[in-house]
Amino acid sequence: QAAFYVNARGFTSSLIPGAANSFETVFDFIDHRLLILATDGRTAEIKLTDMAVSDFYSKFKAALKHLGAPTGIHHAPNEVENALPFAAQTEPGVYDPQVAQDFWRALLACDLVFKKFRTGFLGKSSPVHLFWGSFDLAVTRFSGRTAPIHPGGIPALPDEITREAYSHEVSSAGFWPGGGATNFPAFYAYAYPTPDGFSKADPGHKYAYFDDAFGEFILPYDAIRKAKTPEADLLAFLQSTYSAAADLGGWDRAALESELGEPRRPRAVG
Image (tube, rainbow, N blue to C red; front, side, top):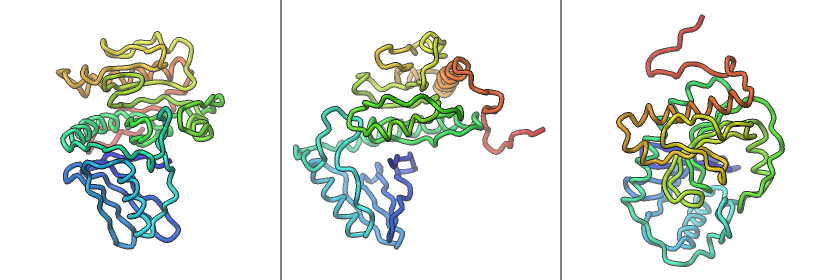
């Protein structure tokens, strides 16, 4: 249940605690390597290049063991239909450095806007984090009220994890590079539980729409990438879909919200 976070060179796991030695993993998409940094000062490095998933997995486990870091990690993908264990994925794999770096740079831009959006909420909210299962960058707001038990059923993800994640009401938004529900990169927004009328709400952008099969608002990435004011357009989508979830769900907006934060300017109080 450890997500990744966008950083100055790629993705970081942040510090993962261990009994004897804690560690951090960093995917570096500038020098194209995976760094493993242990709290005793030792490091390990795996070059990101063409190889089978099984080979990468073997090298990663060996590096963790060498550093005395925890190695009890899940052995197969999550949120993927017919998930094949990493060790069984022996087909040759391709690593395209330019594609990896382009994806990271797209997430850099998304991350900044999501973080700005996050400043307008005083209640509990998640960090902006990358889920490696569905492979989406997401930020979630919580009303503070409990939610109905989630039905589960997400492929290759234990129901108890899903039910913990959705134990309380949420309004969530994010970005993913495509695949599965869409064959194009897109921003998304949803609420759990979905309040009545949510699908008919104004999503704040002319190219955004509600996907009935998926149960979420979808905004194609290209609509933002090609916009004259991409940050403002994306913020409008995030704010409009959140407002719909909060209003229709009866959230205490006056207690939970504030104006968006501005760099180097403290909010006025009183």
